[in-house]
Length: 137
Image (cartoon, rainbow, N blue to C red; front, side, top):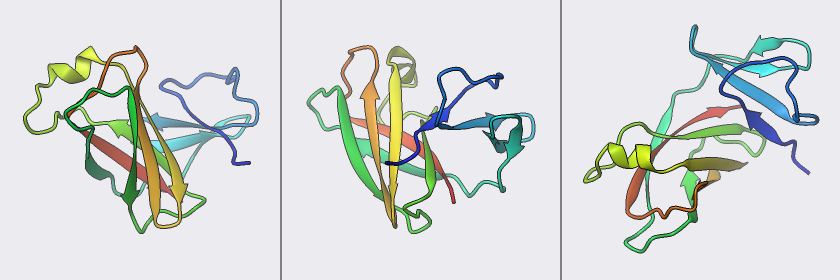
């Protein structure tokens, strides 16, 4: 079984509920990804370039959908951190990103990864969205 990954928006110690998980935090002061080793936050190797792709849910509203993304930098052991882009897809208004609550998760495979986008508030998703991601090997 793979080690669970947990991304936190703000660092705190101790990390409650993260027993057995690898915990990450992106430090916006020096733009370095950090990992909590159980005692302190340690910097991880400089991040790889950010990837970007567009997902299309189609015209019919859905709660969630999984997409397979090809990226040769990805190893089966990589950590892929996907985020909903703050930029709207062509033809969408920026406020659509503010109206919905998204959860974006990724599972790495050799040469590709699956990314699942779902709503957390029961709203529907339709049409296109832009996802950014980072690969950590």
